[in-house]
Image 1 (cartoon, rainbow, N blue to C red):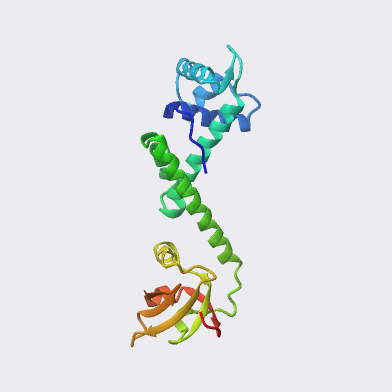
Image 2: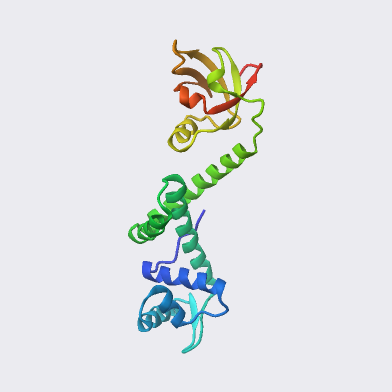
Length: 224
Protein backbone atom coordinates (compact mmCIF):
# COMPACT_ATOMS: atom_id res chain seq x y z
CA UNK A 1 0.00 0.00 0.00
CA UNK A 2 1.40 3.37 -0.99
CA UNK A 3 1.59 6.08 1.62
CA UNK A 4 0.16 9.55 1.09
CA UNK A 5 2.37 11.66 -1.16
CA UNK A 6 3.86 15.01 -0.22
CA UNK A 7 1.63 17.80 -1.51
CA UNK A 8 3.49 19.46 -4.40
CA UNK A 9 2.32 20.61 -7.80
CA UNK A 10 2.31 18.26 -10.81
CA UNK A 11 5.06 20.35 -12.42
CA UNK A 12 7.33 19.88 -9.41
CA UNK A 13 6.54 16.16 -9.41
CA UNK A 14 7.82 16.05 -12.98
CA UNK A 15 11.07 17.65 -11.85
CA UNK A 16 11.59 15.03 -9.15
CA UNK A 17 10.95 12.16 -11.54
CA UNK A 18 13.29 13.59 -14.19
CA UNK A 19 16.03 14.23 -11.63
CA UNK A 20 15.73 10.64 -10.39
CA UNK A 21 15.96 9.24 -13.93
CA UNK A 22 18.93 11.43 -14.84
CA UNK A 23 20.76 10.67 -11.60
CA UNK A 24 20.57 6.96 -12.35
CA UNK A 25 22.29 7.50 -15.69
CA UNK A 26 24.76 10.28 -14.87
CA UNK A 27 27.13 10.98 -11.99
CA UNK A 28 25.78 14.51 -11.63
CA UNK A 29 22.62 16.37 -12.62
CA UNK A 30 22.85 20.08 -13.33
CA UNK A 31 20.37 22.84 -14.07
CA UNK A 32 21.39 22.70 -17.74
CA UNK A 33 20.56 18.98 -17.89
CA UNK A 34 17.08 19.59 -16.53
CA UNK A 35 16.46 22.52 -18.87
CA UNK A 36 17.41 20.40 -21.88
CA UNK A 37 15.41 17.37 -20.75
CA UNK A 38 12.26 19.34 -19.94
CA UNK A 39 12.74 21.89 -22.74
CA UNK A 40 12.31 24.72 -20.22
CA UNK A 41 14.32 27.90 -19.70
CA UNK A 42 17.15 27.65 -17.17
CA UNK A 43 15.66 30.47 -15.12
CA UNK A 44 12.42 28.50 -14.67
CA UNK A 45 14.35 25.38 -13.74
CA UNK A 46 16.39 27.31 -11.17
CA UNK A 47 13.20 28.60 -9.55
CA UNK A 48 11.64 25.13 -9.40
CA UNK A 49 14.82 23.63 -7.97
CA UNK A 50 14.90 26.36 -5.32
CA UNK A 51 11.32 25.54 -4.32
CA UNK A 52 12.09 21.82 -4.04
CA UNK A 53 15.21 22.59 -2.03
CA UNK A 54 13.15 24.68 0.39
CA UNK A 55 10.93 21.62 0.90
CA UNK A 56 14.06 19.58 1.70
CA UNK A 57 13.49 17.36 -1.33
CA UNK A 58 16.67 18.55 -3.07
CA UNK A 59 20.13 19.79 -2.24
CA UNK A 60 21.53 22.47 -4.54
CA UNK A 61 24.22 25.07 -4.17
CA UNK A 62 24.66 27.88 -6.70
CA UNK A 63 26.35 26.58 -9.86
CA UNK A 64 26.54 23.12 -8.29
CA UNK A 65 24.79 19.84 -9.10
CA UNK A 66 21.22 19.04 -8.15
CA UNK A 67 20.88 16.14 -5.70
CA UNK A 68 17.85 14.41 -4.27
CA UNK A 69 17.70 14.20 -0.49
CA UNK A 70 16.67 10.81 1.00
CA UNK A 71 13.15 12.20 1.37
CA UNK A 72 13.24 13.59 -2.17
CA UNK A 73 14.41 10.27 -3.61
CA UNK A 74 11.65 8.42 -1.79
CA UNK A 75 9.05 10.82 -3.15
CA UNK A 76 10.51 10.66 -6.67
CA UNK A 77 10.37 6.86 -6.61
CA UNK A 78 6.70 6.99 -5.56
CA UNK A 79 5.94 9.35 -8.44
CA UNK A 80 7.78 7.18 -10.96
CA UNK A 81 6.13 4.00 -9.69
CA UNK A 82 2.71 5.65 -9.98
CA UNK A 83 3.46 6.71 -13.54
CA UNK A 84 4.69 3.24 -14.52
CA UNK A 85 1.64 1.52 -13.05
CA UNK A 86 -0.73 3.83 -14.93
CA UNK A 87 1.22 3.36 -18.15
CA UNK A 88 1.34 -0.42 -17.67
CA UNK A 89 -2.42 -0.52 -17.13
CA UNK A 90 -3.09 1.51 -20.28
CA UNK A 91 -0.79 -0.64 -22.42
CA UNK A 92 -1.38 -4.14 -21.07
CA UNK A 93 -5.03 -4.01 -20.07
CA UNK A 94 -6.57 -1.35 -22.30
CA UNK A 95 -4.14 -2.04 -25.20
CA UNK A 96 -3.35 1.64 -25.72
CA UNK A 97 -0.44 2.50 -28.01
CA UNK A 98 2.69 2.95 -25.81
CA UNK A 99 3.34 6.48 -27.09
CA UNK A 100 -0.22 7.54 -26.30
CA UNK A 101 -0.10 5.71 -22.97
CA UNK A 102 2.98 7.68 -21.94
CA UNK A 103 1.21 10.99 -22.56
CA UNK A 104 -2.11 9.89 -21.07
CA UNK A 105 -0.45 8.58 -17.90
CA UNK A 106 1.05 12.04 -17.39
CA UNK A 107 -2.31 13.71 -17.99
CA UNK A 108 -4.08 11.38 -15.57
CA UNK A 109 -1.51 12.12 -12.86
CA UNK A 110 -2.02 15.86 -13.27
CA UNK A 111 -5.82 16.11 -13.32
CA UNK A 112 -6.85 13.61 -10.63
CA UNK A 113 -6.66 14.53 -6.96
CA UNK A 114 -3.87 12.95 -4.91
CA UNK A 115 -6.41 11.11 -2.74
CA UNK A 116 -8.15 9.53 -5.74
CA UNK A 117 -4.87 8.87 -7.55
CA UNK A 118 -3.49 7.08 -4.49
CA UNK A 119 -6.53 4.79 -4.31
CA UNK A 120 -6.48 4.20 -8.08
CA UNK A 121 -2.80 3.25 -8.08
CA UNK A 122 -3.29 0.89 -5.12
CA UNK A 123 -6.14 -0.81 -6.98
CA UNK A 124 -4.24 -1.07 -10.27
CA UNK A 125 -1.11 -2.33 -8.52
CA UNK A 126 -3.11 -5.16 -6.94
CA UNK A 127 -4.92 -5.99 -10.19
CA UNK A 128 -1.74 -5.99 -12.30
CA UNK A 129 0.13 -8.12 -9.77
CA UNK A 130 -2.73 -10.63 -9.74
CA UNK A 131 -2.80 -10.61 -13.54
CA UNK A 132 0.94 -11.28 -13.73
CA UNK A 133 0.75 -14.10 -11.17
CA UNK A 134 -2.07 -15.82 -13.04
CA UNK A 135 -0.28 -15.44 -16.39
CA UNK A 136 2.90 -16.89 -14.90
CA UNK A 137 0.96 -19.84 -13.50
CA UNK A 138 -0.64 -20.38 -16.89
CA UNK A 139 2.72 -20.36 -18.67
CA UNK A 140 4.12 -22.98 -16.29
CA UNK A 141 1.16 -25.38 -16.54
CA UNK A 142 1.70 -28.61 -18.50
CA UNK A 143 -1.26 -29.04 -20.86
CA UNK A 144 -0.22 -32.08 -22.91
CA UNK A 145 -2.83 -34.30 -21.23
CA UNK A 146 -5.39 -31.54 -20.79
CA UNK A 147 -8.72 -31.40 -22.60
CA UNK A 148 -10.74 -28.44 -23.72
CA UNK A 149 -13.78 -27.92 -21.51
CA UNK A 150 -15.93 -27.92 -24.66
CA UNK A 151 -15.00 -31.60 -25.21
CA UNK A 152 -16.54 -32.78 -21.95
CA UNK A 153 -19.96 -34.37 -21.64
CA UNK A 154 -22.67 -33.49 -19.10
CA UNK A 155 -21.82 -34.86 -15.66
CA UNK A 156 -18.05 -34.54 -16.19
CA UNK A 157 -16.00 -33.01 -13.42
CA UNK A 158 -12.73 -31.21 -14.13
CA UNK A 159 -10.08 -28.91 -12.71
CA UNK A 160 -8.98 -25.85 -14.70
CA UNK A 161 -5.34 -26.03 -15.79
CA UNK A 162 -5.07 -23.15 -18.22
CA UNK A 163 -7.12 -20.37 -19.80
CA UNK A 164 -5.94 -19.74 -23.36
CA UNK A 165 -8.40 -16.93 -24.14
CA UNK A 166 -7.17 -13.38 -24.59
CA UNK A 167 -8.35 -9.88 -23.76
CA UNK A 168 -12.11 -9.45 -23.14
CA UNK A 169 -13.01 -13.15 -23.33
CA UNK A 170 -10.28 -14.05 -20.85
CA UNK A 171 -11.39 -11.23 -18.56
CA UNK A 172 -15.02 -12.44 -18.68
CA UNK A 173 -13.97 -16.01 -17.85
CA UNK A 174 -11.83 -14.86 -14.93
CA UNK A 175 -14.60 -12.58 -13.68
CA UNK A 176 -16.77 -15.69 -13.39
CA UNK A 177 -14.23 -17.08 -10.92
CA UNK A 178 -12.74 -19.52 -13.41
CA UNK A 179 -8.97 -19.48 -12.84
CA UNK A 180 -6.31 -22.22 -12.74
CA UNK A 181 -7.16 -24.67 -9.96
CA UNK A 182 -10.92 -24.02 -10.07
CA UNK A 183 -13.14 -27.14 -10.13
CA UNK A 184 -15.98 -27.34 -12.64
CA UNK A 185 -19.02 -29.57 -13.08
CA UNK A 186 -20.54 -29.76 -16.57
CA UNK A 187 -24.31 -29.67 -16.01
CA UNK A 188 -25.63 -29.59 -19.55
CA UNK A 189 -24.99 -28.72 -23.18
CA UNK A 190 -27.44 -27.25 -25.68
CA UNK A 191 -28.46 -29.51 -28.62
CA UNK A 192 -26.06 -27.80 -31.01
CA UNK A 193 -23.25 -27.72 -28.45
CA UNK A 194 -23.64 -24.05 -27.61
CA UNK A 195 -23.97 -22.85 -24.88
CA UNK A 196 -22.66 -25.06 -22.07
CA UNK A 197 -24.11 -25.00 -18.55
CA UNK A 198 -21.59 -25.47 -15.75
CA UNK A 199 -21.34 -25.20 -11.97
CA UNK A 200 -18.40 -23.27 -10.50
CA UNK A 201 -17.94 -22.55 -6.78
CA UNK A 202 -21.61 -23.40 -6.18
CA UNK A 203 -22.88 -21.07 -8.93
CA UNK A 204 -24.66 -22.06 -12.16
CA UNK A 205 -23.03 -20.37 -15.15
CA UNK A 206 -23.36 -20.37 -18.91
CA UNK A 207 -20.39 -20.47 -21.30
CA UNK A 208 -20.34 -19.95 -25.03
CA UNK A 209 -18.57 -22.65 -27.03
CA UNK A 210 -15.67 -20.35 -27.93
CA UNK A 211 -15.19 -19.58 -24.24
CA UNK A 212 -15.34 -23.24 -23.18
CA UNK A 213 -12.92 -24.26 -25.92
CA UNK A 214 -10.28 -21.88 -24.54
CA UNK A 215 -10.41 -23.44 -21.06
CA UNK A 216 -8.09 -26.45 -20.68
CA UNK A 217 -8.93 -28.83 -17.87
CA UNK A 218 -7.92 -32.06 -16.17
CA UNK A 219 -10.82 -34.52 -15.88
CA UNK A 220 -11.54 -35.56 -12.28
CA UNK A 221 -13.30 -38.52 -10.73
CA UNK A 222 -14.00 -37.16 -7.24
CA UNK A 223 -17.00 -35.00 -6.44
CA UNK A 224 -16.57 -31.24 -6.44
